[in-house]
Length: 192
View 1 (tube, helix red, strand yellow):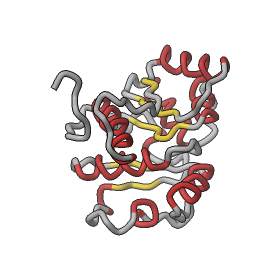
View 2 (cartoon, rainbow, N blue to C red):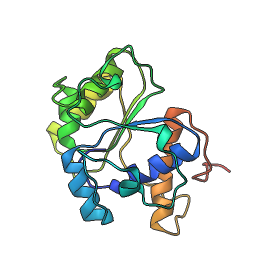
View 3 (cartoon, one colour):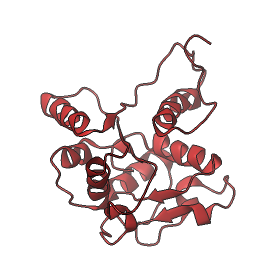
């Protein structure tokens, strides 16, 4: 998770992946902590991370399936191509993070893990939530797509006739899960 608006997308994605039995390797940027507090009224510590601080107490105990890494811990497994994953999602993805990935900066663990996914040709899904977009941001998105990433902007569809904010969020989370091959019932499919 990085510092773009849309922390609700990231937390909901974590809930859905945990509900699907997936193991998660999680890292959070300092700007994401600020956004989480602003948007969700939750206080998360990067140095003393506790999953309930991020997701609340409503989910069952899943501590053994969530592996948290400090955003500057380059010794984390996800910093190496030899560490196998089923894919990586940055949700939400700030424009600063997207730029760092587009230009291979690897200034923190989030950038480095994304770089690893690109070099190893593994699924990398970037979920920006920004509007309007300037030409630099569009070029950075293009560079990421050309390198092999999927850019999946947080743009809910309305053909499903969402009745709540949760429905709109679930549409985006469902589309992310589609990219990862994670089965779900979060959205009504077109034509059904």
